[in-house]
Image (tube, rainbow, N blue to C red; front, side, top):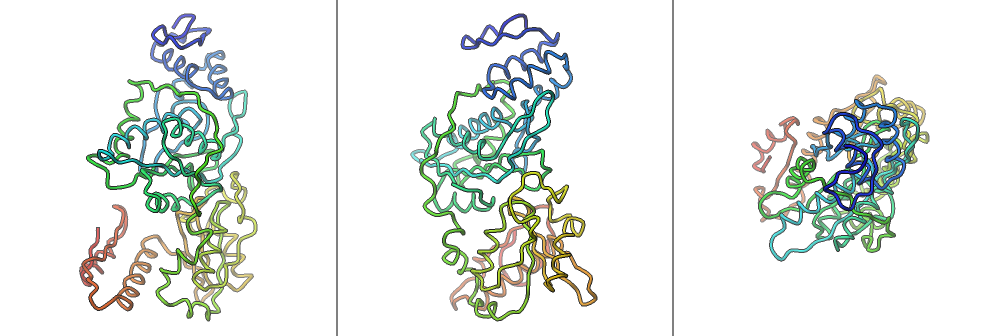
Length: 410
């Protein structure tokens, strides 16, 4: 590497004090120091270089984040395989390019951007790097705005399901969510939800392909400003007007719900779910659930649980079950930090708690939705227009119901 930045980049004024003796690593170090505009993560790589920690530099710089079923997820920190300013900027560049390539000729679109509160300080060698969803969401918006993309930016923390809903409602090309969901507190993530149909290959697949080509193309991060993004959605879906959005799912049974004496406890596991679950219960005619006070408000350190995943069962529901027994509530509802994962527990006659699996909940919800549809559909309604979907790892009990009833299952 020598004493200066790579000669082919005429815009670089980066000076590298020493070579690692590994040409591939030298190039990766130079790229990071050239492209990263965050002084704290840049200083972290410089410190590792000065201390001769070449293996850690390889671990951080010689591999890339790749899109998986949950988008991008990793610990926050410096390096191409971590979540940080640079990787979020580059992910947005690649995603935008892939999505725009897959648009039909003449189509235009915008993007919805939001975040879930995982702002925290990370322990890093010789320094600490504060990172937050708010900053990363604004960086995402800034990259898109720099390419003249209309951005709808949520003005507050929202659940992940708001993203696909808003993409559909606004006709956006895609939505981006900054969240690591129920991962450990050190992690963060980046989810892209494209609008379908797109011509040819789905845009997200193109974005995935693009991440694999990063090493060859070496996309530099353009200077960006953190904007005060204009154009927020006219109403946060499900929040400002919950009755108008949620009541259509009540199947005329709201009056029955109002009469129930059933009590619920809800935990949001230090995430964003509390306000929205309260509104949803109210819209459906139930008394608002009793919140677990220690876990009600957003807390990126997850101070009461090591793993904020409600599907872990009784081990993570201890505070909820204890409160439910105290309040004589028979049902516990738990949502993960970004409120896209659900667990339900019910107290049995013997006092023990039954924590339902995801497959059990899907079977109950699917049966209930279809039975309500049958009771309320018009005479000319065609069951062949009814669809239920499941993931590849889910139980196929809904397929059995579909074969019996005549609706579609995929």
